[in-house]
Image (cartoon, rainbow, N blue to C red; front, side):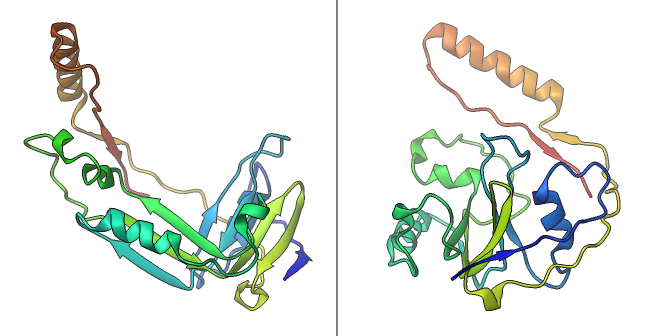
Length: 201
């Protein structure tokens, strides 16, 4: 089902577009999965927001096969391939960075980074109805009973601590220099080094 909807204005200073207004107006007691496109240029993507009806977390070596089976299942509603915009029914999918160690296990370092967050390798959020914002208009897609009423509210300015790098800048630069040496020596042609930045909001 498709019907038009209106996003009420939100009290956000310098709100860049309707995505920010939609985020501010979303009820506090409703979970939110959102793909946000910033800017109203002709090249901006759509924004889609929904409350998931189910959640599945994947962990371990079987994550890849489980992900393939889940996403290969029959989709409800119109054929997504026939329409570029979301139909309102489908998945939000989060792929963890460490998921790819299951695709290429030989590339895992002998001493991998400490997993201190215990995040899953992938998260699948099933949605059956939501709000689509595209080309200056907003409409309900999928099951309208799953789309909440939006009420404008003011979002306070977030308080963000300073960013903390892991590894430190000194250690990261040392590792980069070592990789460059290995490349020059012909020991490898590609390496992926990551530096995590964390903060509290």
